[in-house]
Image (cartoon, rainbow, N blue to C red; front, top):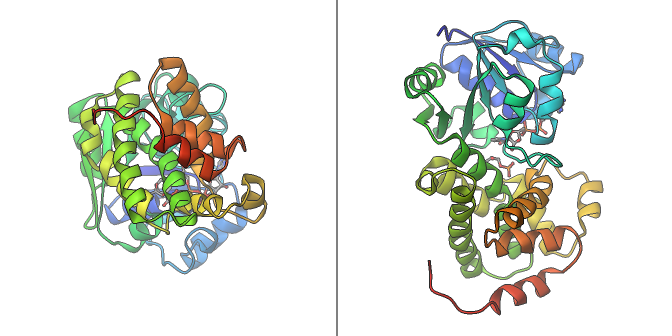
Length: 328
Ligand SMILES: NC(=O)c1ccc[n+]([C@@H]2O[C@H](COP(=O)([O-])OP(=O)(O)OC[C@H]3O[C@@H](n4cnc5c(N)ncnc54)[C@H](O)[C@@H]3O)[C@@H](O)[C@H]2O)c1
Ligand SMILES: O=P(O)(O)OC[C@H](O)CO
């Protein structure tokens, strides 16, 4: 498997940060973005100001609007756009190629995970999932980050992890693709909840209790969906859950804070909120929990708030009055 060149699809914050990580790892990187002005800026000024402000980009990154063949493809568009972004690519670019899925979300309507979308659109592609505690600004600036890279073939996954690893970006190889995908998607739902706890002024104790119960709920979801709950002790589980559920830098947490202050979803979005993947993933996760008969009161609570069926006070009262149970 040749792993010299990388094509990153998506010129937002995460695509640009991953392009930077790959360049720092010694790969030749093509960053594919739909915006011609962004292409000019990256190629001439080595910045992508809309995505990452003044962060200087590595000289090994070149930008383009049209993807060219590469040894590795990284998909870095929002979860709800993955299918359209894949459909726009020449199928030959994906056939038998390692495709690294980096979006954290479940697809509206189909309820699909990112690798299910990929295999639907490009059955010959080789899926890998990259997830873990990693803000784009940290990765792009070369601050130390570690992530999980999950794939179906252990030796291929280790080779790919080595190809993406750099002095400040450390991928750990893993084999539980499903567990990593579900963890990455659900942590955004719980980050909305934790942000809401902060926004509503409910206190740090409540937030930590919520994170712990979210971890237990996530384990039930992962097991029911065919993943391994043990995966959650790693970077994609505990690592990303704690980062996103405690940091005001998280867009999902920020969105949750606005919910907790009593703003409606519509008002938050029309106020210019950045991408918060949990908003689209919550109803999907709620539908999956119900269809799989998984006890998921936290996902249901977030869904009730997002859909306007209940306010934070009612939802918290409901959670606190659930029958007492053993901590299983
Ligand atoms: N930003 C982070 O810190 C971070 C870290 C880890 C994972 N992620 C995940 O990465 C994904 C993308 O997030 P982001 O931060 O880059 O968002 P973003 O809003 O910064 O950028 C999204 C980019 O995708 C492009 N895009 C949208 N639809 C497209 C399509 N159909 N074809 C091609 N390009 C398309 C947009 O033009 C934009 O450039 C999300 O699932 C997010 O959860 C983000
Ligand atoms: O800003 P958020 O909430 O999309 O989180 C970004 C990353 O997923 C953190 O690992």
